[in-house]
Image 1 (cartoon, rainbow, N blue to C red):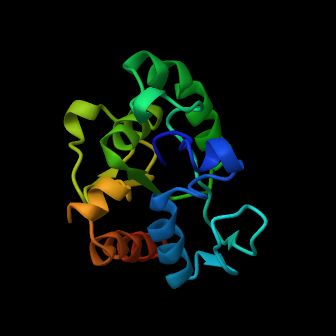
Image 2 (cartoon, rainbow, N blue to C red; image 1 turned 90 degrees about the horizontal axis):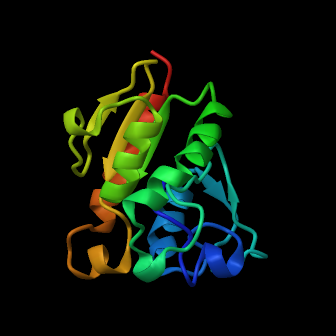
Length: 166
């Protein structure tokens, strides 16, 4: 679960993370772990196809300066909740960034105050689903070293471990 459609990504191309710098790391990681196939070329007409993955956003519209107001997140929660309700058999979710994490917590019935955000944080929802969190794969987080490819990949490794039936 991401933040919102990016100005140069989904808002422009119609496909989440396509055309944004964040999409380079996200799609490379999905391809590496078999969660996507094809070739990512930052163009919605490329051959990339998601495999067992869906991308949802906390906010439906492009917010000014990519920083949604709390009211925007609150007003868009019903879309996120509907997306989650349409996925009753999905067990593992990933919240990207603190905004994605908090929006996911609220939509999944977890009190944000009791489910602290952190990279590789892991929380179980009241219905037994699992919410993992990661620093957002934004250009800023990558350029400052807050998030490396190895760190991001470690979250996907964990998600795949949790996804397997016990």
